[in-house]
Length: 329
Image (cartoon, rainbow, N blue to C red; front, side, top):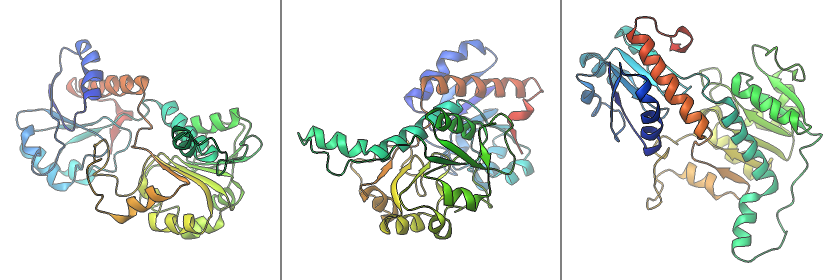
């Protein structure tokens, strides 16, 4: 099987090259450019393409891939909202993902964001670098004894529940399906979670139902001084409503590893650019907001797991017995 990798970063190539010798049946070629209607035709002669979470695999791209003879789209991510599944089904293209590469990595990053905005680590770092050792503006609160509200208790959400429980927080959760492995968690309706939680962390997929689930109405139900963290999908939060909430001093801190309009920014160096959209610039302007670069997954362990599972997906498809749990339908 010949696989064409799009949007390859140096760490992608390094991690995949480490495990490729275990898969002599697979041949890989790397491209730095991302997939688009202009670059999808480069896949002619390949059996599969491999893309990441920010790649736009829409209807037109899928149609071009079909014309190129591609039978498989490999996602080196858990999320798949960037792929037109309807078009893939129509074109007879299988889509496979990496559903659980390192739940703890993302959960730990969510905790890091929560700790950082609570104790103003980003501000303290800058102050001390300027020889300013004043504590003014750096006061936080204890998480111990407070209530964490976890929205979504799949693998990542469950890891976040355990982390919060481990530091002595009471854990509330909202999910359609309760996780039986979390006996210490109290499942409650979403409104109850919003009203009672001091820390709210999002760990659910993006869908029509969850799009902008954190909107002005939801924000108004939250406690004053709440901390909000999102390491899942940016569009779970209505950004304009979030900005209104921040300006109304609803939040003591907001930690975002994902945000709306991130597509052009993800994994790119834009330090010499002027950001075209005011929404992202406004988020970056608030002193109680930390935005990171979609790096929740980014650990050595997670990269190895992504590489191994992606190639296992390709090999299973090649052998005619694709791993069912990893097929996106």
